[in-house]
Image (cartoon, rainbow, N blue to C red; front, top):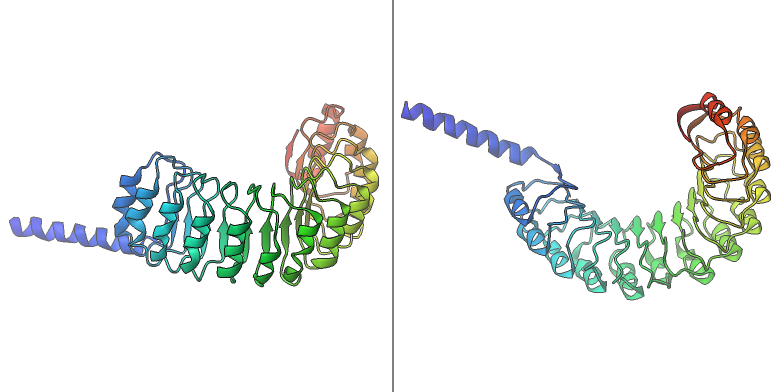
Length: 351
């Protein structure tokens, strides 16, 4: 019997060992796990992806516990954890890391960016809303991470100079949301002209039509453009956006100066599938009529907070085949308009 118990124990151990070798991805985000838990997962030596985002109890100590075992780790998400510069210093063990997300980690500074120098395979880096990252940190990124395809520095409001990013010849996605960008900052990105397909300049209040002219002239391959809450953008600025004929998504929520006339400038963007004009208070039924006539490929439309739109405006959209339609807080749209919207929309209507 003792022999059988020993054999059974050996089988269970082998099964556990095989399981730890086979597990490639672990997502424990938004849980109450602690540093002790990270210490226990060191046995997962073949792990490729680890997500501990929104785990408030994770600190530098926990990260240092486990990274020395993760030689094969390729994706690491630490959003809104207690990680700081000290914790990121342990990532030199993870030489194969391709994607790192440390958004909303308040302890991250320029020193952290410098500590990532050894991660030569890094392709995606998200340091959004890490207030300690400045132009100096951005220069480190430009110098040491030439193969980046995705960079998010949103909310790093001390960043104002982007010329150092011209060295990132593979960069396809750039998020500069709520940075201290200006029209001249856009001009300094011309080195990315042949590769950039997605740009987010939302909440960059210093960017005007002149900046949009730079974008149109510099990035002919752009497909996704977000410029929410850019108060300096007017109808004349949208005339430049209309030159970007490959656009499939445009978001300009709360651009308060935009009117129906501005929407007319988007007529050449016939490939557009997503349009967000939420809280553009000067848009009227005439603007919606134009959308139906010229942007027939639209699948997602958000007119929430457009207070001048009525049921007649909704009726003008009847030829569209929307997958999703958002129309919340439109005070002049009645139950009749909502019912009409539901007949035009294949998917969800949020009213």
